[in-house]
Amino acid sequence: MLIQIAPNLWHMERGFKAAGLAVSSRMTVVRFEDGRLWLHSPVRFSEAVAEQLRSLGKVSWIVCPNRAHHMFAKHALRMFPQAALYGAPGLAAKRPDLEGLVELGDSVPPEWEHELDQAIVRGMPFVNEVVFFHKASQTLIMTDVLQCWCGKLPWNISLYAKLTGVRSHLDVPRTVRLITRDRALAAGSARVILQWPFTRVITAHNSIVEHEAHAAVARAFGRFGA
Image (cartoon, rainbow, N blue to C red; front, side, top):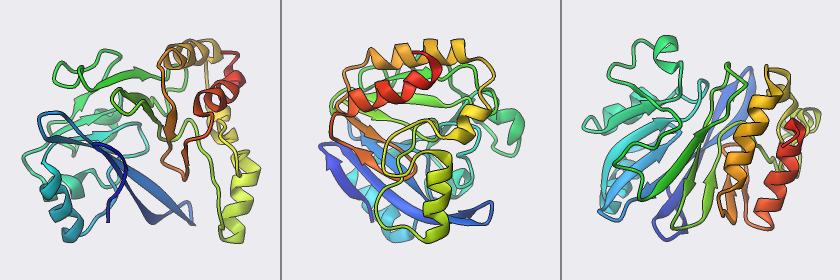
């Protein structure tokens, strides 16, 4: 079920397999002042969770924040067919079956601008991650570009996290660094993100960082020279 993080902010983790590894991903839910709900990086969820969402407000937007986090978009749309679907740059070409998908840019859609800010992490076209800042809760919402794998994990997942450099601390995974094509562009995007006054970081894999979050992000983005 959804777990509340802060006023008008919830999350839910769900396990799935990627490249043969049993990993988890996180869906983040933001409720706007008018009661509409914004679903970030949907995971597969049950009818009970759908009912919980309906009790919180109207699901109006479903967001696939990068070119990898789109697996359960159709599932979310089946649950909430009235919702509008938004996705990262390049996702429409990758998933032409996601009809009606609106690609995001650096400019926030007008219906979101009072609640969120956003920026694309440039320089890594295979990812094209769109990062969000929830103003009311001072929360940075990331997906894959920053990760922090904490807690008890199966040995192979723990080893994977160590090898990619994200075991028990927030960092840019080595896998993401390897596919970064333009470090200067990535650094420019990082500087935009660091201007936001966030005090919390939500990542899709697997931790929520509450302690000295801004400093931790600044250290991680130092990988790009930001």
